[in-house]
Amino acid sequence: MRSEFTAEPSSNDAVDRDFTVGEVPAVVRAPATDADRAPAFGVIIAGCGPTGAMLAAELRLHDVRVLVVEKETEPKSFVRIVGLHIRSLELMAMRGLLERVLPHGRRRPAGGFFAAIDKPAPKGLDSAHAYLLGIPQPVIERLLEEHATELGAQVRRGCAVTGFEQDDEGVTVELADGERLRTRYLVGCDGARSTVRKLLGVAFPGEPSRTETLMGEMEVGAPQEEITAKVTEINETHKPFWLRPFGGGVHSVVVPAVGVVDRAEPPTLEDFKHALRAIAGTDFGVHSPRWLSRFGDATRLAERYRAGRVLLAGDAAHIHPPIGGQGLNLGVQDAVNLGWKLAAQIRGWAPGTLLDTYQAERRPVAEDVLDNTRAQRELLSAEPGPQAVRRLLSELMDFDVVNRHLIEKITAIGIRYDFGDGPDLLGRRLRDIDVKQGRLFDLLHRGRGLLLDRTERLTAGGWSDRVDYLADPTAELDVPCVLLRPDGHVAWIGDDQQDLDAHLSRWFGTPAD
Ligand SMILES: Cc1cc2nc3c(=O)[nH]c(=O)nc-3n(C[C@H](O)[C@H](O)[C@H](O)COP(=O)(O)OP(=O)(O)OC[C@H]3O[C@@H](n4cnc5c(N)ncnc54)[C@H](O)[C@@H]3O)c2cc1C
Image 1 (tube, helix red, strand yellow):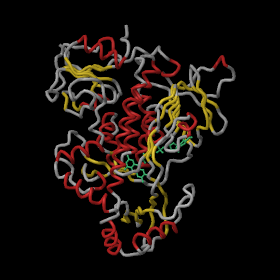
Image 2: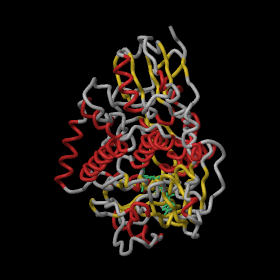
Image 3: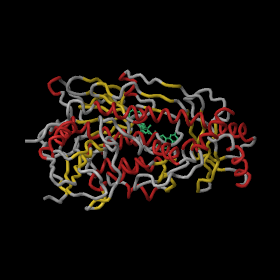
Image 4: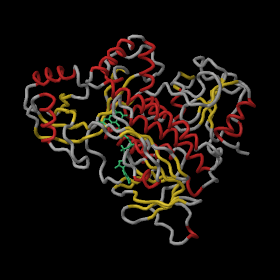
């Protein structure tokens, strides 16, 4: 009988040694001749936003040589507060990052964010991390970048990806300064206007922006009582509007823009004053801005997430209005889905279709997010029809099952990948249950598969270099044995070794000798 958690070192180091083990090289010049076109990197990532940084870290868990190329010299300065939803918090816990992230954010109840309809969080959400964490986006980006570099990713700032060519062995990536680098795979995590997506010729169909919104931080001249009264009155019909104290003497302002002529032109304080007068009849004496920005509400989805050795993730693959606060979460979750699959491909053990499951699993999730933001946008309209639908939905959300469905959708804990027929748990993520050794997610820090075996008869066998084993894990699990993928999704449930072996092959390739 085995009762220990076993985590064996990889025996696959010989495979693809050039791209995996050891120090990350200094940037390598492009090969002068065809003879030495061997890629220096396993993966080059364009863009060090939250998606790129998370993906780099995931790849480093598997010793893949990673270079992140970021066009900006400095991290972003504008303080967009984003909400980390339950699934992203779970992923942070799964990679040992939650303790690092929590002190920088504010916990809020996991409810009330579907179209800003004011409802409490449903009771008993199925997660040990059932809250929303409000956190400034620059902070989460810094923490993820630190995590990636601590794991050995190389980040090169002030350098844009401007071109690439792919062939059978790899991709030659061209940078803005003319340098050319070889890599086995290139991933475009370069945001909504993704250069990689455009160069790849992947279509980005959807709806263009219908409305523009101004967002910024500035000081105000008007007394707070006057501001509060006016904002409350306007919010009765216009939800995407606020002007509220942000600390340090500044107010955070979000207001619908008026008369935007050139979207490429950055907004001015005068634009804010103009927009505030249009909606509130006063500009509240705003002055001394810290930063000003503008965003649209376009909704688009990349037709493909992969073309040969080039892939897309995060905003490069999907954009939608920020209602419900899902974009960053979606990108980070893309990264965790893709990381281990791409690493498996590079290390040489990926089953033939594994990399294609990235698009098969994640594109439908993005489609669903796009749809729920479309719906939310309608519900925020001041027109009488949408307002009536909003009132009706608000009534329906008093039914727990409706409220729960919407919150599980937005927080991404309701996702079930299609792994074929099987119990409801198959394809879903497993929550952070108590196990004999502590918490389940603590066993997933290294990004490996995990077998939770209550029968104590089964084994990860020839896959134990990729899959850890835990016998008699917990009574909380009400099935005999579960195989978890590195992203925490349930890949198999059963009690038969032969069936298990077939599923280990399906997800983790050929067993080691
Ligand atoms: C007002 C507002 C509020 C939001 N609130 C939330 C929220 O509450 N929750 C949430 O989940 N999401 C929210 N979002 C969405 C979220 O900000 C984005 O979805 C998220 O930033 C996407 O991350 P990303 O890494 O995919 O792309 P980005 O953050 O856009 O990062 C892309 C990076 O690539 C770099 N880059 C671009 N081109 C190149 C190139 N050619 N070469 C190299 N580097 C390049 C860029 O400089 C950038 O650093 C909000 C968005 C807005 C506008």
